[in-house]
Every structure is written in C-alpha cells, then in structure tokens.
Image (cartoon, one colour):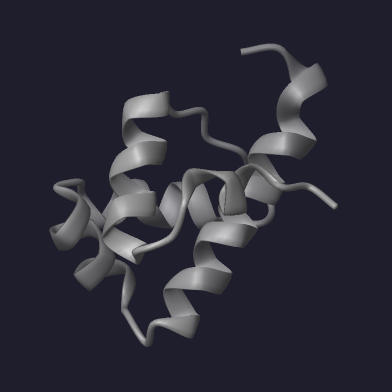
Amino acid sequence: MKAEFRENYIKMGLKIAYYRKLKSLSQEQLAEKAGLGASFIGQIEAPNTYKSFSFDTLFRIAKALEIPPSKILDFD
C-alpha cells in the first residue's frame, strides 16, 4: 500500500471506531457480527497505525454497524 493513502485509512478506522461505539459494541462484538477477527478490527481502528482492507471488508463492517459504507468513506 502506498503511503499517500495512509491518512485515508486512518480516517476510515476512526470512523469505524466512532460508529462502533455509537452502537455500544465492543471490538469483539463488531468482529463477530462482521465475520472478522477482533485483532483485525483493533488494527483497523488503531489511530497510530494504518491497516489496509478490501471493499468486501468495508461492506461487511458497514453492514454489521447498520450504516451505509459511504459514512465510513466520508472524510469531511
């Protein structure tokens, strides 16, 4: 992954954490609902690092959070 998109991945991770907390879900609960590993969710949400992930993963997380994927991709 190119470093030029680092900031976008960090922003997406922070959005995922925000919506997860808004739904009162733990990382483990979100991971279970999305069919992902809890450590993977932790890596995505970590503000001091960035973890790339696929659109399939984005769609699974958005579905688990019951939000449109565009909310995670809105960087404004």
